[in-house]
Image: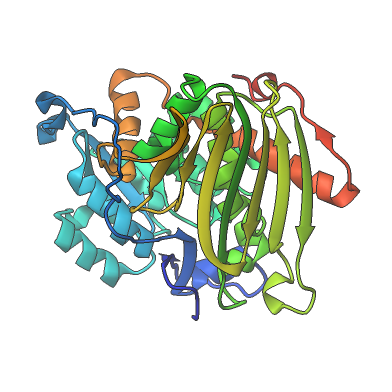
Length: 414
């Protein structure tokens, strides 16, 4: 499968094969899918001026004893799981890998051996529901195509497990509501894997913005684009992906804008264009431009696309300066710079913050929520709000008008 470099894959297989459904086709093949953009880069650049690096207390760096850590099962053993999730679980303080779920028994056995997972804790998609009988498993991490998130999340809840699901949360807001309801019925926790909310530079941009260090924020601009490859990949199949660039990578600047401002948008306007002659976009959209207005008057303009060379950036422009992330949404190598007037001169600082893995922080946040019996920082309602916003963007593009949003907190029950 040809594709842009830096993109990771996800695999899921099962012996059940049906030609009539995209879901069955995907589950019936030893397929590789795409779950995001993995941009590797140099270490954080050293700037002319730097902020003081917060130091983690020594006791917070020590891992919990194995018997006190939360047990995790990872569903799907594609490149993303192997390259990001499993290494993060090895590094995590409060979490440990105890089980694997895959459609390739041979691959699963090999990965289990490499990661110290007992062979009795290796599952297929056929016997997935039997995890209910395994007390070692506390949390299930769903790393599957978007169209399978709801099914496997609900099944995990029915098995009595907590769930971390990849973003987007589902294909639709209706599915997202079903997932939330299933979690409540099972009295289990649901978290959406918004990794960027744990990335230290993203957290610093939110701090700078909400503390008004640079004055009141006025505008935001962000983009996440990449050049998709084969038209046969699941990411370009509407039933499996739910949509095109918007729910896949446009979701990053959309969600981050809400995190940065600490506000929910009140109005959206969207435009969509796909080349009708490009076979990749027979079912899903390519380029999306959308504007979001927030209660404080901040306006954000964002872009996503599947036919441009990869690029990700995000800038917040405030009264007395700006904060810029370029690249913004990479797994590593994100860079933060801050511009503002210093005396009579315009100055730009390359901001250095303590370099922590966003994946480790995200996973341990879920484990902390389980151990402390509290809601995780990015619960299912967070994913539902994004789905409602994206659906409004699609509606805006269809009807060529701005769409007013209701009270998202009230609409999502939180």
